[in-house]
Amino acid sequence: EMEVIGKTTDAFKFQNDADFFAAIGNNTTREKIQEKLENEGLSVVSLIHPNAVIGLNVEIETGTVVMAGVVINSSCKIGKGCIINTSSSLDHDNVIEDYVHISPGVNLAGTIKVGKSSWIGIGSVVSNNVNICSECKIGAGAVVVKDITEPGVYVGIPVRKL
Image 1 (cartoon, rainbow, N blue to C red):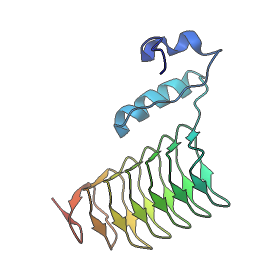
Image 2: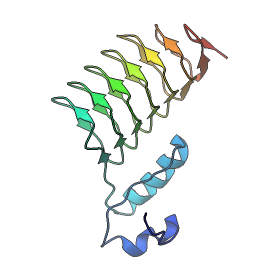
Image 3: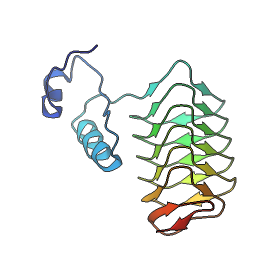
């Protein structure tokens, strides 16, 4: 159990004594807080669970969390402030842009790009060589088999825009 020592604005009191992580699920809010911390010169770190499996040549930017049971295969790039949640898998050569949330149990095949601030719902599947543009929400259990080029909410098997 951890002691709460203040609010977000109190972080600056501890800037010389601690590293920081914006543990907030909402992509937009997480971005706003992480960018503020970084712009003020605070040390923002990434968190990687010891039971995650990370392949060769994987890049993970600051403020990203990789949870237990995650597998990230070779040559993936994960942006700033991402959540790669429990037991999700990212195969080779994926590009996950900044402030994306990959929910638990998501399976991304190879050579996938997920645009900034998108959210991939729990248990979703994305076929290989698919691009998902920025600002997309993919519903729980959805299956994405072709590119998504327009921001919005997508659900179903295969996905359709709501």
